[in-house]
Length: 116
Image (cartoon, rainbow, N blue to C red; front, top):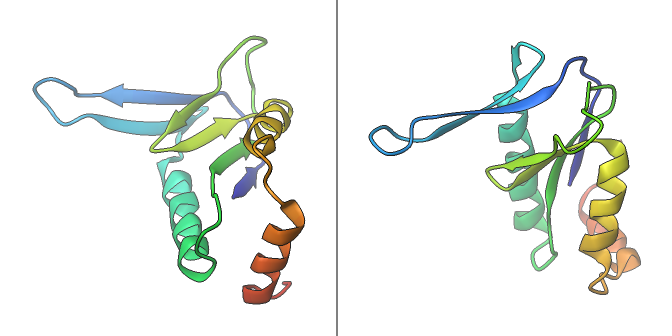
């Protein structure tokens, strides 16, 4: 489940709390709190799991024009990858290397969700 966004600024994960307080993770792009984007991907994944059970689903927020560092900078929060388009292609190759039948997945999703 890919949600592509065109945001300026560097994506970062701000972590607060831990031992004495509950741990909270906040997705920040530039200076904008973008945590709601993670919530949106999680909701979309839940819809897919409800209507097309049995499919392997991985969520990703792909920031197209973000200020990614030359090395690293990619992370996950609440099971959602926050990633650049170039790094996402590598991740996708790894995820589908286990023999995912892309045509079967496409057909299963197309039966439930009509084109926009």
